[in-house]
Amino acid sequence: MDTSSTTLSLPEAPRDFGFFLNGQVIAAGDRDVFERHSPAHDVPVTRLPKCTPDDLDRAVAAARAAFVDRRWSGLSGADRAAVLLKAADGIRTRLDEIAYWETLESGKPISQVRGEVGGCVGMFEYAAGLARSLHGDSFNNLGDGIFGVVTREPVGVVGIITPWNFPFLILCERVPYVLASGNSIVAKPSEFTSASSVILGEILTEAGLPDGVFNVVTGLGPTVGQAMAEHMDIDMLSFTGSTRTGRAIVAAAGASNFKKLGLELGGKNPQIVFADADLEDAADGVAFGIGFNGGQCCVSGARLIVEASVADQFAKMVSDKMSKIVVGDPLDEATQIGAITTDAQNSTILGYIAKGQDEGAELVLGGAALDFGRGQFIAPTIFGNVTSNMAIAREEIFGPVLTVMPFDTLDEAIALANDSNYGLAASVWTKNIDKALTVTRQVQAGRFWVNTTLAGGPELPIGGFKQSGWGREAGAMGVEEYTQVKSTHIEIGKRTHWIG
Ligand code: NDP
Image (cartoon, rainbow, N blue to C red; front, side, top):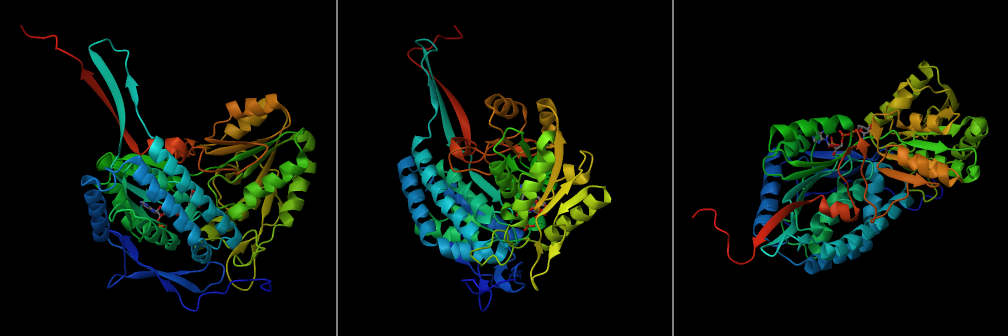
């Protein structure tokens, strides 16, 4: 690995983070701790408490107390907005610190993480506006005797379970929206990438969020995460992660208090490229769509579906692009793909690469781990001759592995794109408006990109069709999802009596 242009050095010792309860960081004390090693550098970087179900109960009780006494839910939208705007400033101030620890825990390139954390500032600013504009509805057309009002209320105590691929970004696609309507939160980050969630707790308290409204319980998925899904006093749970764990959460919610669920699960997202597209742009977009974050994105464009007349030429263009992606030390400003975040994920990706070859797909590019002396890195990989029954075409690999399938007609392209259990995201590349609109209408996906990919921001809601999940996050819907709707009929004047 060329480390000559690395600008940041590794920590001399792992930094201890606590968990976050009632407005304070709580040190591990006599709890077990887990030590996170940088997946890029093989050195310990952070240590966090392994919280227990009792810690979770304390966090839920703190969140419940804050909700019941209305210290946050009882404030005006304007007052809540003021706190969210101060939190946005706080994130801006601590951007480099968040980016540094997140880079070390996740293996993502530091320049990318800075961009993501910068985007989180916008999430808080946008949600601040939503805190002020959230409103209900009224019915003045029910006759002279009745007035109808529809109001929105916060759901109550909201649990948020986040994964390791975008630890701060995914948290911030939820937290400001959940807070905007007055809810309280207990968050559980992935055990691999917990530091930035604890830092967010400090930022929110500093910004004036009342104690108990935001809590972070660090710990393991099968213990603390599962206990959240089963908890009788969590009113709603937002889960982002694997479809497998999503199913366990649905079962646990059904077996406990029927808590409302938001689920953002897996994806196997198509990139449909027509021959009339700007192929240079499309090649860059397809390479970006699968290369960004090492393909560890639920919305990665993992399936290239390309018009047969340009398929060979276009695959070569994408291959040329992907062969130039800079893979390496995530602390190096020039790096575009860093390390694979978890050991298990590294094995999963390499397993799928082997399986693709066993299944008879043609390895066009990459296909191996990259040895930089330390850390776990995988070369950007392309498979040709892929058929839709192969595991590499159907299952979420969650790595920098692109499959290529040609099509002859528009209908065939749409059928191939929809031939998936998932429906999270899709991209179409064409200069023909009819094709672009037809594909956008007929392909089942919650997020669509036309002549671009992976674009996003605080305004547009995100979420999936089919087995990619339930509900929407961000945008105005991202606030509404975390509210209950109440309908109130108000009688005007003297009642017409039922009896006598
Ligand atoms: P998981 O679904 O296991 O992890 C996601 C989150 O759920 C983490 O915070 C995890 O905690 C927590 N969790 C784990 N088990 C439970 C449980 N029983 N109850 C409640 N919460 C739980 O994903 P993996 O890390 O195992 O990744 C496996 C695959 O999932 C990947 O290969 C990828 O395909 C997909 N994935 C999809 C993501 C997306 O953005 N949609 C994000 C991450 C993964 P902890 O990490 O502490 O175990």
